[in-house]
Image (cartoon, rainbow, N blue to C red; front, side):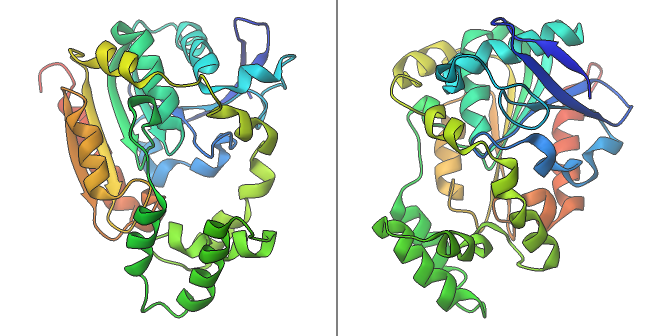
Length: 286
């Protein structure tokens, strides 16, 4: 696995998949989940060379000497170091879930380095937008006819009450997938082993975000942005994803109707087509 050095000397790793075209730098969510859960993004590696960063302390990346550097804003220069390591002046970025916060902070600090940004079911606390318990309940109600719903919803109630056991946290997993099957269950089963939980607690801690400053920095940003939401996802709901898109001048919204939080698993072909068409439209001569 290739590595590079972060500004503080921490050795960071990334996976590389695919051989064609410009690199697509992928930032995982979790927060602080190793990039392995992204797989090949539903076959997107057949179209683009995927550069999948393991954030510090996850996957093949080293644990930093200072745990405070797990905070989202303090990882921005890790992304910039990877860009420089790749030897490209500008990058296409793709970020999933909590990785959206890091990508937005990177764009706010280094707007000239970003050619395009694809936000996949992504958070935007960096811009002052987040999901709520009410959003979770609204999306959950869409699944009331599913055979697993009663047990999963009861577990969700425990989560919202702050009393959930590990088993109850596991039981809510179906809500995050558009189709709860063996593939989804295997994907969900990898979550705990792939996630640095102590780092996740620090990722969005106090001081990580200054929404007013980020909005101001991106108010006249000219990069192309795709905000891709899952029609069955609660973080964000499609209408909340539309609010995120409205804050970014070059943004367009796409809703993958039957998808949850991992749209490349729910309908790989549609996901890949949507992202590739967006990226291809920005190539010179198109």
